[in-house]
Amino acid sequence: DDRLLTVPLSHPDYFNVKELFSLKDLFDARVHLGHKKGCRHRFMEPYIFGCRLEQDIINLDQTMEHLQLALNFTAHIAYRKGIILFVSRKRQFCHLVESTARECGEYAHTRYWQGGLLTNAHIQFGAGVRLPDLLIFLSSLNNIFKPHVAIRDAAKMNIPTVGVVDTNCNPCLITYPIPGNDDSPSAMELYCKLFKMTIIRAKDKRKQNEAFEELR
Amino acid sequence: LRLIYTTTAVQRKNIGASGPEKYTEEFIKKQIEEFNLGKRHLANMMGEDPETFTQEDIDRAIAYLFPSGLFDKQARPMMKHPTEIFPEQRKIQWGEDGRPFHFLFYTGKQSYYSLMHETYEKFINLQKYQDQLLAQDLLPQKEKRNLSGSRWLTKIELEEMLLEKLSDDDYSRFIQLLEKLVTLPCGDIKEKYVQKFSREVAAQLQKVDIEPLKYDEQGVAFSTGEGARKTARATVVVYDNGTGKITVNGIDVLHYFPVLQDREQLLFPFQFLERLGKHDMICTVSGGGRSAQAGAIRLASAKALKSFVTEKEVEFMRQAGLLTTDPRVRERKKPGQEGARRKFTWKKR
Image 1 (tube, chains in turn yellow, brown):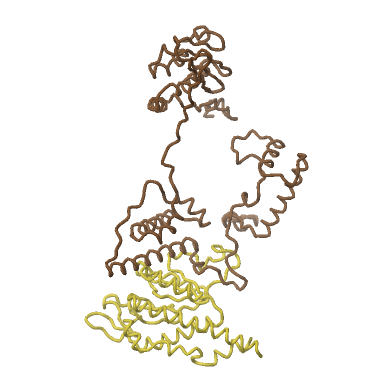
Image 2 (cartoon, helix red, strand yellow):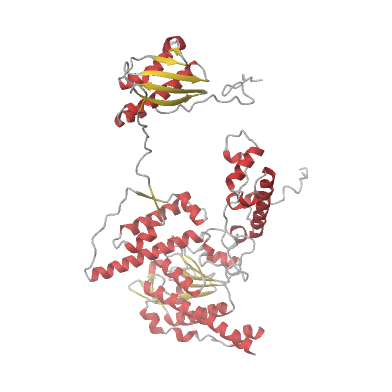
């Protein structure tokens, strides 16, 4: 049991998430496109490659690194049977995100966020609720272009966060930010595909390792 | 500032604010066992067979053993199966390891949002199918849906179906989605799904039943009617080919009802149908006072006249209020007041 949990942590990329995506895939899915210069958030300036005709371009090398770290982290969480909650308040991709979550066997919340969901969970849900162990934000703003309340709540409840941050978002409280586009359908489909593949891989790996342990 | 000593009661949590008590499965099972035992005891007490003791027998037994004059049926003593008494509730939504069963559990309203998710999925699939057909130019023509015979579920019915509280906004959004789904052509696939959320509306109003005329020994047509007003009960037999003679309890109407107002009430149905001198009437009336008896006879005679008259005239009578029992009864006196409504004289000091 101890071996199950400690062995994956010794490798830098135990689940081999690097092979899931390449720079070309990110470019084809238009992940590098940001918003206009006027919408730029001050804390996103380190992640921006440049500005062309007033439109910000995100640095895809940095995106690659951040994405690799984030996928590795989600894989470890899924391997340890943690609860993953996909959050996105973009109405266009609500259905896509919910279907992705359902197919992974994880959970999604793409609807109106009630105030006390994380902080007041014991009263809202019942006495013995288990809170999510990871929050994945596929769009970290809500419908009025303010930071999603769940980022702050997760930070309060010590829940790690992974989030796709666009050029108008605040990457501060997110543990594993992924600078990238969150408005194009192609980009969102790519993210959903990547997260789904990592989670399924991690779960399969867990079953394999448990089978090996039993054989011993 | 003086130190105010308060009891620990103030610091205790407000238990009422956390919502209704959740029943565990064991509790409900225990209640069901107790109910079954109690049913057998009751059957023994009443001297009936415990094996064939139905719910109706239980209701009758309880009404016999605990007679109650309360108006509200829900307030009277009742003995029903626990599933009818304890409202259906959500059992605990997560398994032993803590993982919730439903993928939308963390939204709070899982059944409502999963319903929206499903409906939206059907909508997108239908749109894709429609686009494919458009590409091949095989679009079927718009079929008109019969709007008159059906209605959508009400908010309360939907809440019962989902076992969750909804807001008006949520409900209206769901109905809008259903309407959008219905406007698309390609009917069959979605019809079954949509039928789950629509109910039939009874197209006709209650039909008034008109009894056929009866004929006595001399071949004269007659019909009977019953009426009530306050505590008075009247039965009336209206004969055809008459001269307008009216007999009440064996006494002529002029002697029984000396007041003009009462006699006017009796004659009103005939005057309305313009059949003043054409019918004879024999009435029996009991209970109530002068005016109540007159009203009861009026209602009874109007009901009897239904058989003599066309359907259109029956509808006119109904609209005139001749066929409706007057629901007004004497209101009870309440304690702390002089009468039903009159309060005691208010004194400022």
